[in-house]
Image (tube, rainbow, N blue to C red; front, side, top):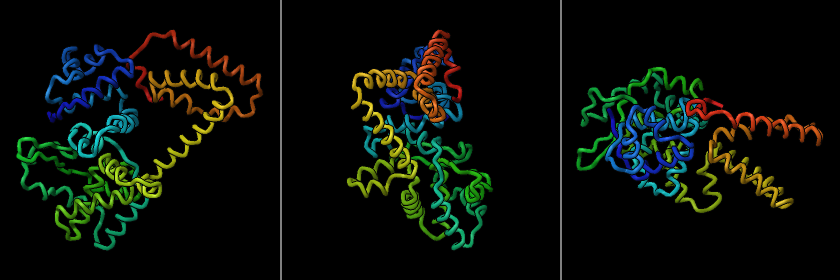
Length: 338
């Protein structure tokens, strides 16, 4: 079973995430079929490695299964890496795996247009590119027999440790991307596609990799390492604007708009605003995704309610909270999709 290094950052992230979610160590140990002592070793950084499958199950339990997990891994990685330099991020094998392999990134239209243009210029089909990727010719120096495919593999028994991936992709993958049947994908697969195109154009392995990363950055398809490196280089507003994706910009616009409303309410009645915001903060500490699902409800449909109607709605809401607050806690229920 593949293993990743248990770094201090990983130990701290497991412990903090479990505590933030209010999950008992005993419940986590039961889910991953390990002892309480094992959880303690992980959280206190008393082990050198952790099985990747076990690590995935830990975060699956802490963050939620399937869609929930994919939805929450991005903010977890952003939170964990906020104080790390780009080079320090590269040293965290678990971050690389979750960032490059598990994190699903929206595919920009501009990147699809770029790939389509390259295919036309090289007179290639999408299937030919995938078949070339699956040859894994650049891995001739590695023993790839029986290695797990389409996943990051770390080699640590060399003078210069490295990571690589053995591709075994479905032949119609790229065609589905181009036809927008697939609109999200992980970083390593997209990087492999663009790198293969440059190789088929005649670039060396090193040159193809450098061009692929540069192209992905240009189309704002970032790994956390690349995004952090670019943001560190860009100091001014216009330069930062070129790094941010449309999704980043939309997020900033919405958050800024919400902050303006909060500022207006704070200016109107600071004590009232602080009390309500403190409740919101405490609620987010318990379960951020659940709270976002609640405050992201379609309350704009209540626009025509008069003052009395709004008071009645708030009374019903308060009663509903009290009704469900008496229910026993279940570590399984809280991970359903909201």
